Structure formats: C-alpha cells, structure tokens
Amino acid sequence: MRPLLLLLTALCLAAPIAAPAQEPEWRQSADYDVLLEPFGIEPSQLRLEAGRPVRLRFVNSGQRSLSFSAPAFFRAARIRSGAGDDLGDGGFRLAAGERRTIVLVPAAGRYSMRSANFFHRLLGMSGRIVVE
Image (spheres, rainbow, N blue to C red):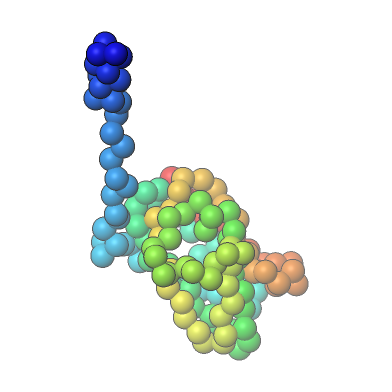
C-alpha cells in the first residue's frame, strides 16, 4: 500500500500545473477605425497583430442602417467581457450615424468581413481581415 501511495504522490508532483490564463492588458489596445459605407468597408483590408489587444471602432457613415459580419473572425477572437455579448451570429447592425466599439484579442488567420445584406456585398461592401 505504501509503495502505491508513494507512486501516486510522485505522479501528482510531476504533473505540470496549468497556469491560469493571463488577462490581456486592455488599456494598451491598439485603435482601429472601420468605416461602414453604403457600398464599402474602409479599410477594405484590415491588418492586425495576433495576440495583441485591439479596439475596433465601427462607424456607419450611411443614411440607412448597415450591417457588418465576420463570423469566423469573432468566433476565433477573445472578446473582452461585455464588449461583444450580442455577436452570437458573428455580426451586428448599426443605425445611420451610429458607432460601436469592440475590444478583442485577434487570433492568427485570414477572415472575410462583409455586409449581411447580399445586395450590399454585390456592390462592394466586403473585405478581408488579416491577422499575423
């Protein structure tokens, strides 16, 4: 019994202890503006650094409500608590003139961003998010 107890103790001590996930330094987030226009997204290619917190400020400059969708990007990113609670489908809508800020840590990859409106996509409201 005693050798078994010693063996179990040794195994427990030898097992690596997982370090708790470190909270990103949100105050040091890089700022990026994303302008939603009736038939475009500026910039059309958004370049971000993987693992570095960013603050994305979305602005609707149109006269009507516009949508933004990037499901794979938002799903892969670590979104700051409370900053993207309604991104379940990977996108959102902004009323004319409305602004929205989302703070997150992007994951490496290439993602598409677009309007959820098919007609707007056909007229150019789409782009890429490149995270390296």
